[in-house]
Amino acid sequence: MKALSVRYWVQSFPNGEPAKIKGKPISQLGFAHFSGGRSRGGNVGFPQLVAVASDKGTSSPTSSMPDNETEIGKKQKLHEEEEENKGFVLDPQTDDSGSVVGFNLTSSSHPLTGDASEVATEAPAEVNSEKVEETDGDIEGADGAPTKVTHSIVFVTSEAAPYSKTGGLGDVCGSLPIALAARGHRVMVVSPRYLHSPEDDTFAAALDADCRIKIACFGGEQEVAFFHEYRDLVDWVFVDHPSYHRPGNPYGDINGAFGDNQFRFALLCYAACEAPLVLPLGGFNYGQKCLFMVNDWHAGLVPVLLAGKYRPYGVYKDARCILVIHNLAHQGVEPAATYGNLGLSPDWYGALGWVFPEWARTHALDTGEAINVLKGAIVTSDRILTVSKVK
Image (cartoon, rainbow, N blue to C red):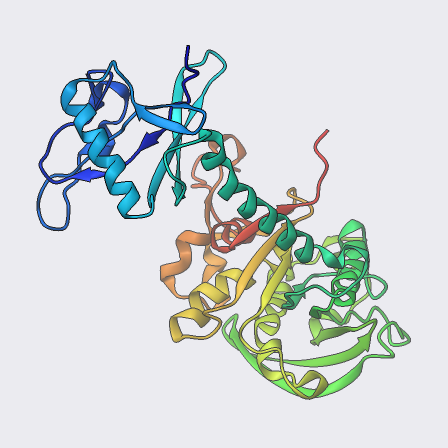
């Protein structure tokens, strides 16, 4: 008894003759979606599937097929010889029970003779090997070697060790940029220049970049300066403003959180968006094609600004932004009335708009309306990463 090696050869017939397998219309075998289209000439084309039995390199239509399909099979065989057997092969895929659940469409120039698996597996094997080689090249920098594709990466963070640190955020933003720079990326870190006392020499190695910009927000123009230090292949850029010069930590003192934190970190975000455009670090600036890595709510206005104030004018249209959430508990929530201070168009209120649930409101007349900077970052960033471990 011949061992059947069943394959399916696809061809469109302009005469509209429905394809059948063992006498059953194609629509009954789950192939109805193949026969619903029209050819470019306007004629309906149906794919013809021919089951072939192979025995020692010979092939012939199965005897169980109707006479008209047997005739089509003969014509198909002649056509293959003339066209050097070009076409497509549908390789059936089965589940655990043996039922056909799908097909892989494979381009093939093999004749319809011989082992069916030879046609179905040879081409994909070559493609898979190429993908593996390409992937190996992409992760070549795992041991510190330069990567094939490099980016201009801008970290925006409220703290970066050893300059400022209250927890894990400072550790990550003080070490990850160095690791990425070692792999060939151009990396900048933008963070505030905190001075907690007149004798504070934490930023002694950071020199004045001789660059001042004015930021229109909070009802006026705020001037900030940039300081720069090049260390471990990384451009460490520090935003300087009087609001960063006070005792305590980056966010508060013994009396609690600073009341102007929204203002302080809005300045950081505006300055971070301008730094790649205005600072000629190493002789030339980072430019518009940057990958911004914004960390927690303190840097959360960056993706909102990119979307609402830069891209509408064609600036940063090729830039991308990744939000890294280190601590979800702090979200930069302030009263809704403060939205106007951020310098954004009213059209973008929906991105930051937030309503507290009734149980969290302070009194019966409280509508719960607020703005949430982290929420705005979530809805405007291109990607979101978290670093917290779920227990």
